[in-house]
Length: 366
Image (tube, rainbow, N blue to C red; front, side, top):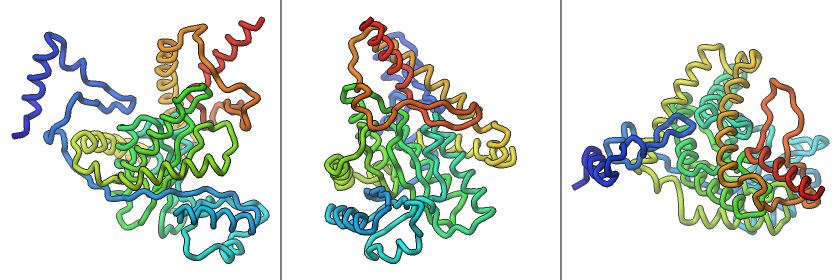
């Protein structure tokens, strides 16, 4: 017979030996309480997700022969979906005529909604969901959409990212019940670092798993060394990792799991409330023009950064021995460049810490 929540709580209080049970409840940045245990009593409104995630390959198309060669290679690796970014001199209709017809393609200019900027800028998960569905509402008032393609960024907060994807799917489905849609997930830049450690590999792996269990339709591979150019071998290894995951995991596995159902429902409710607030303020465009949207996201980003800085100081006090990848190994500049105060600019959480380490290394050489 299943223990009730009251019985579990009584048992925990006995084991705590005087400590307050409430001390075990963690309140996430989403203001969603994470309980020490969940029972059926916590599941208020279950929502099933039956999606089998597939790998998708992004391709920059500038040359017909090279593009067809790359597509043939990935097709031999059991990849059947491609996200195509065309060179400005190419015409989409002409490209479509020479693409193999037995595969699936999406041109980047056909992405209906891209919420990855919100995530990489520091928006909370609730904000990512609410602003994404609000953006869809504005598009539908001016354009006819037969199928929506939504890009979403996934970080390393495994449990919460799973809940975010499920909450997004639920809210979108309820607001636009007759509109077919696909979620295209990529690993967020937000939590990646320049440290010479296994952090990035673990971060990417957790994001992959959260994407598959959360129920995104497609997943783009990510180079954990984000500051380096992709090689064929790196891409091939990342694709193989995703395919190994999707061979044994899918979103259906978590349907009915108490913690997932409870947390995703709480996130869904909060996102719905925020979406309604956006609507009352006149919509997403009005909030952007008034800079209200930017202020809300930056407030959440600042809170997240402060917490992260505190954790870094705790785990890496000044003059700690930490190795970072030096400038000579960068193919891409990894730090945020100057931007206007009212813009939404992606920024990694590790940047302040990395700059501190670089400064300490410089001072030690003097």
